[in-house]
Length: 197
Image (cartoon, helix red, strand yellow):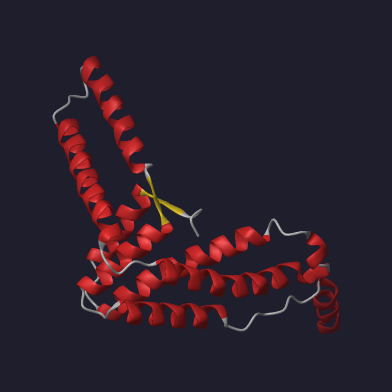
């Protein structure tokens, strides 16, 4: 799970969306969906490197998806165990996000004061653009993001860490255990078309 990272841009986009959600259930579902999708992505990425000996024929994708679902539950459990309820790990992230927003706001204010007609202002605008891009490409670990989500969950008074873990595991299990549709071989599809004609 430590290999998963969020860029500052992605995190700020998520936080702005979360700030706009007033309904507690929708807020919870949105957070859990993000976590579940990231865990599934990590599980599927790992499977792409597995020897092809495990898969054969037209069902390669179906088998890999089923295996990803099984691995996702283990990864989700590991993610839940890595969460910290003490608030120590979240302090630096909250401080960092506050500084980041302050710097981005300062860059925007500086850009507004620049002219489009002066060459020196054009160069300054380009430098500010590079600074902004660099700030937005900072990365944060997935576990840190999980701790941030837990902090927001508790801040909204949706429950404690036990509720968070239980609801997250249940949400993920429901999504992972949806029935897998088996692929229909191409020759069967073609033969059924011939029968219709």
